[in-house]
Length: 426
Image 1 (tube, rainbow, N blue to C red):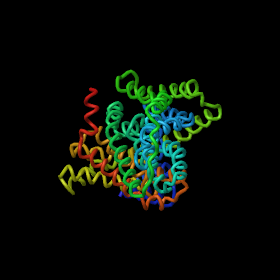
Image 2 (tube, rainbow, N blue to C red):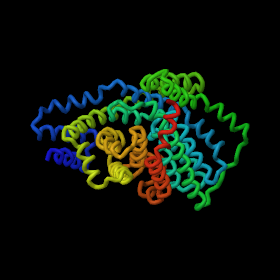
Image 3 (cartoon, one colour):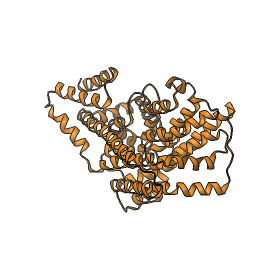
């Protein structure tokens, strides 16, 4: 009955439009009162969930990404991507995907990517005759790549939710090949749609122009190398790398590009504070919610329930993916990582999956939820930028969903895709 009160109150609160963070906290409070426990326990768990040193990496990574976004880095990355792949069929769609990948290695935020790259690319695509739904679908799906490549703060959330025993460096490394696979899959889907609709190619500007644009974008791209090499080599921790990212971002946009204004700096600070406040509140309330589920032995019950359905590890992994895909349609990514990890990680381990591999599967799976109605916050941002309704965008999104789902299945059932590269660095 206790678990019914917890999940039932949470579901009702979501249905009446309560923000997820408040729904988690209020549901936890209702359940604690139902169980005749002191209400202060909920607030202790909220504070405990937020009071983790490694979580300092999140506000610094968010701040660094915000600085890069406001420092006109996106324009340079889009120009570089246009020179690299613009000559392919549906050239601006291919440019959108590659630019999103490059920007993701700088910002680490899918929403920032959809806003920054989409703000540059969607108007250009519409002006060149690309349908608005195509431009929005390419932008939203390409932003998913950011979740898999460093510096993805969602990976840090997963490490915290898993108890802190998983290496952030291994996760950063494990996401590179799946991120590349997802990039090529979305590029292929964009190419197929472009061929069917007869979208044009762009003119290849020549290798001299490509080299010049690469040099212009290189200072921003070096942030990827600094973070990955520093964390992977052990020179600094993930938390310290976030601080390094902020300092480097300030140096690049302040001294190299000279694009940092006082107003932009203030907006970046305020934006990072707002984002961090929202994320930490979700983490805190999700911690209280997760503590109650652990108290009610939900993870152990879930493992036993899955085993009662099937003893086949392949089917168990498929059931996990289907459950997460359904949950991702109405919940945001951060709370699902905090709640879903303690529940589904033991099931994945029981099915023989490595925790690092499960982290990549979880993040990619919940990323697909970000572009799935009715919630779909990432799709909502892209639609807002492209001035297209979510319904119109969703009607023609099948090729992109299929591409992302195929990559999800590959990452789920081929462990080497995510585990080979981390093993090479050990």
